[in-house]
Image (cartoon, rainbow, N blue to C red; front, side, top):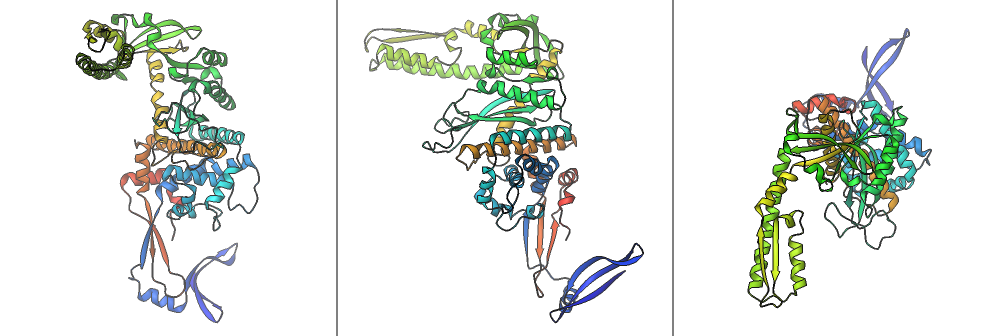
Length: 563
């Protein structure tokens, strides 16, 4: 039974709506809601149509969904279990700080200095339990938390979270893809506290900046990262290969798996005799590729020996199944030819050829005017540079005559027959190298074609807007490793979310998924005060059909406002 009950406090009466029910045969107050003073109640009844004084909007959908996945994986609890107890004046646990950093990296990457202001524009403060005290999201608290983590602890945390993801989401680890990249940083040249950041071959073409390398292993099933390894940016990718393989085997063994059941896909950039000896010793299955030019006998196999792979799955792809001696062993080789790849290579080579012809024509005209100051050796160097792109020296023949500027002349010709032979020999072909002797050709081709999964993961990390490695506002090696850890964790969660949406029939990219979720906002209606604090009402904005499906899929009701 409901009734209005008054409490006299400090000479004033405050009213509450109480509901009383019998519990174990005795009357007990089961709910109580504050109504205010008598004037408040009268004003509320007289002003039922009172408009809100102001409104505010907070990010809800994307923050709630990501926080829910952090909770599901047990990010904060796992970090705290590995790290152990922490002093009570820290504001929040280290695990909570890493979970907050992960949410920010996925949704709206910013610096730790800007985090507190950003966090207050979201509904997130309501999600964290226990509620964070004032000042807990200050950037210095984040830095303190990051300082407590060692490289060994980060590896153990990643191992536990990866195993949790495999078990919770039933990930298939039988097929894995491995690749490596690097990220440009803006760390000062004179900074000696970040030896992991080194100048090297920049894949973002920023050769003027110091680089941090990242090796990543993802599943065929949803491109979910399960192993990562940061390394100095001046090291060649192949130097990190064996350590990654050892981690893969350890994590697979922790799930009770046999290494022989695993198949790792990687590109030819990781190949070396030592690396291949290691993978053979571990007993892993593998699908990789070999440089076609290193095996002319395979390229010479005539086209009539090739058979279609699977017109439904791989239109225009044919293959020839054989064996080859490579990397110290004799293994199965599948030479494939793709009509679409052939066309792309032909178009690209035609552009390269046209550029070389144009440069040779300009050089020929300059020499004919007799005004060049270059020596014969200098001119030959310029010619070599023009013909440096691969295959050009097979197509273009150049003759340089004369000993003085007035007599030097250049003649050149393009051999159309050589161009045709080159196209027949190389264009559209790949050599796949594997120890999966019982697999059908189509399965080997399909395994190799998962390589873009990890490449798309790297592209995602280089997206400056969502799930981003950059900007990285850290300049010590230890913090860079922590930053890399939660960026990879952010990628793992984002791809798990995309995978769940895909399985529910929503085929969205990571950016598209987060954009749909970001459209689910929380509106706060703030009404004029009638004495005391202003009254506020929280509600979610209207949702599109897609947003409603995502809301239900990710169970966002558990974070939705109730008042």
